[in-house]
Image 1 (cartoon, rainbow, N blue to C red):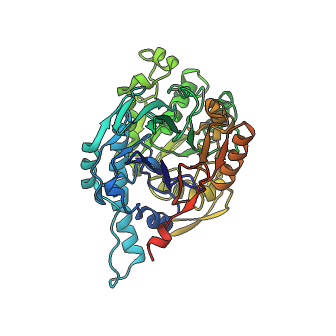
Image 2 (image 1 turned 90 degrees about the vertical axis):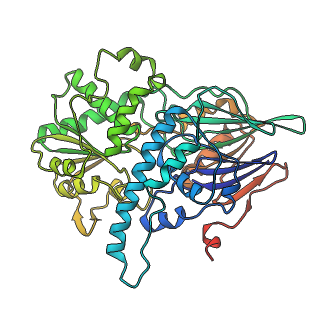
Image 3 (image 1 turned 30 degrees about the vertical axis):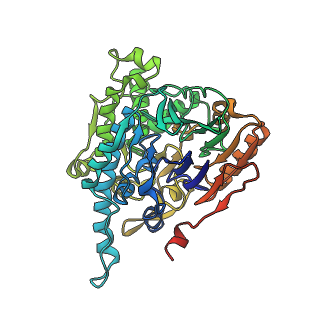
Amino acid sequence: MRIQFCGADRTVTGSSHLLEINGLRIFLDMGIYQGARDEARRINQYLPADVKTADAIILSHGHLDHCGKLPVATKAGFKGPIYCTPATAEVARIVLNDSAMIQMEDIVYLNHRSHGPQDAPLVPLYTPRDIPQILQLMRHTPYNQKTDLGKGVSFTFFDAGHILGSAYVLIEWTESSRQRSLLFTADVGRYDTPILRDPQPIPGPVEYLITESTYGNTTHAPMSQVGPQFLDAVKFCIQRKSRLLIPSFAVGRTQTVLWYIQKFIYDKLIPEIPIFVDSPMGVEISKIHSQFRENYDQPTLDAIGTKDLFGLSRVTFASSSQDSKKINSQSGPCVIIASSPTCEFGRILHHLIQSIERPDNVVVFCGYIPPRTLGRRLQEGTKRVRILNRWYDVNCQIRTIHGLSAHAGCDELLRFLAPTLGKQTSSFIVHGEVDQSEAFARRLMAAGIGRAAIPAMETSIVDDPAATLRPTPGPAEADE
C-alpha cells in the first residue's frame, strides 16, 4: 500500500490524496486550491502526471476545495467512476458550474488588466461545457453501504456532519490474507449544530488515518454561545440602521446563517428586516436542502411543516447581476449574505466597496479564511485594503464567529477520533496550516495514537514498518 499526498498538505485547501492498494489507484477528493490569485492558478494547473490511469475517485463532499479540480482531471484523461453520496452529487453539480462561470468572468478581467496585445491570453481551468462529463461519471453511493472496488478493496461512506451529503471514508482491503483499514476524515462537522446530524461515530479502530486539522489547535466556543454572538451583530446593525455583510460559503454556511436569523425572528428577538442572499449558487443550494431531508437532525425534522426553516419566504435571492446591484440601493438595516468567504472574487466585493468605509456597518466572517487573501487581511485587522482597482480605509467593524464554522474544533476532532487513538494507528495530519497541524499532531500523540506525521505536498508513504515520508517531484519541480 502507498499513499501519495497531492493537496491540502500543510495548508487547508485543495484536498487530494492518492492510494495505491492491491494494484488499484484511488484518489480521495480532487479539490481546488483557494488562495492568492496567481498562486492558486499555478497550483491548480498541476495534477499528478498519471491521473488518467486512476481507477476511481472517492469524493467526500461538494465544497470546491474538495471537488473543484474534477474537471481538470477529466480534461487530463480521467474516465473512471467518481463515487459520492446522492446529496454530494447535487451540491457538486451546482458548485462546479458556479466555479466554471466565475473562472470565465475572472479570465476576462485578468486578460484586460494584466496582459498586453503581445501576450498569449489566459484561459480558464475549465468552462461549463466540461461539467456534464463529471456528472456522467458520478456513482451515487449512500451512507453505510460497503462498496466493492475490486481486488479485495472496498469503501464505506459515513455521515461527517459537515455539509449536506458530506462523508468520511473507511477503506478496507485484504492483503496477504490480512485485513487492513484506512480512515479518511475529509472535513468533520461540529456537534450540536442546527440542521444537520452530528458526525456519525467511527465504527472501530483503524490502521491508517488521514485527518483534517483546520482547527487543530483551536477550541470553538460552545454552540450555545454562537447564537448570542450572532444576535449581537444583527442588533447592532438594526439599532444603527446599517448593513451586516456576511462573506459566506453558499454551501452549508449560508443555510446555517439563514436558520439563525429566522430563529431570532420567530423568538421575537429582532423585527423582520430585509435579508438578501446575493449568490446564484446560494439560491440553488438553499432549494436542494429540502430535497435531502434524510440528512437533517431530529429537531429540524420535527420543525418541518411548522416553520419556514430558512426563511425562504422572506429572503430576497439575487440571481442576476441586476438583482445584485439593486441591493446597494437598499436603505435602512439589512443583512447581505454573499460569496465568497475569501473576498477574492464574487459579489461580496461590490458590497464591501459600498460598506467598508462606514463605521456603522459590520462584516462578520463565519470561520476559517485562507491566508494571503483579502478576507484574511480584513479578519486580521488590516486598516487599508485594495478592492478591485482602488484602495479603501477599513472603518467598518470586522467580527469573526468561529463557532459558526462547519469544521470541528480540536476537542471535537479528538472526540470524533476516539476509536482510532491507539498504538495500532499511524496518522497523517492534513488540511491545516502548519501551526494547527503540528499542534494537533502533538494532541494525537498525547492521546495515545501510535504515530503522527505532517506530510508535505507530493510526499508519499509506503506500507513498510521502516518506511519514512519520501519526497517526489511537486508542482515547482514539474514545471522546470
